[in-house]
Length: 242
Ligand code: NAP
Image (tube, rainbow, N blue to C red):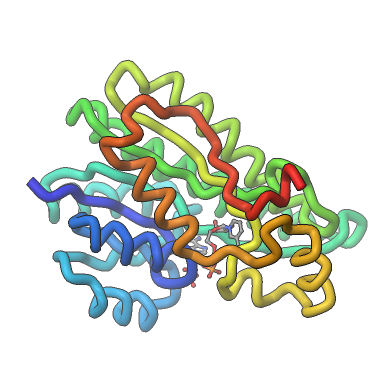
């Protein structure tokens, strides 16, 4: 039986590459997107295995629950959940609007909680499931202008550790990946001089590529990682330790 993976925010960037990589590994892909329908359609045309599109804002719990029910109905089972959807709304703390704090936390951390909560009963019945949450090195080390994003991504690491402990006895694993600076639309928003400074602080002297993250997701959900749970894998060219 082919495995099925739900990837949130899969239409672009890192999520898109995770979909392509798991498709190559033989997974059927449930592609979640919020607004980027054209990108989602174009991704679907590049996949070789059967796939389906699911429009849903992951910060809306009821919508997430309906989406997951629909995916389960469409594919018959779900094996992997990759929580990739995320946003930034950067500004210095003194200028940060409370709405900008709340929306980043509600999407990044709340969205991750929502999918895990809605998916867990299915994983428990199956006595199998794998969750990978995309955090960030910013959640590990903090960053000027990103108090909201750092809080949401640090929260994902705590959520991952707790969920892993709660559901390990049901043969469900839950890990996080903390990417450094990866070349996508999100990192394109960083201004060139800031980018140069970042590059100088990365021991491997390059930004990461979406494939660097997607390959790690493929490993964590594979049979080669069956004794790994509750971990956060930092993939950042050495930045945090640099
Ligand atoms: P991206 O290119 O901006 O893609 C983000 C994706 O998330 C988009 O497809 C977007 O869909 C989706 N999304 C946003 N809000 C959503 C919501 N409420 N519901 C469903 N989908 C939603 O960003 P990326 O760089 O690939 O980032 C992917 C993940 O990696 C994020 O969690 C990000 O925080 C994390 N990350 C990125 C970097 C980096 O340097 N790029 C570093 C560390 C961590 P729509 O376009 O349809 O809204």
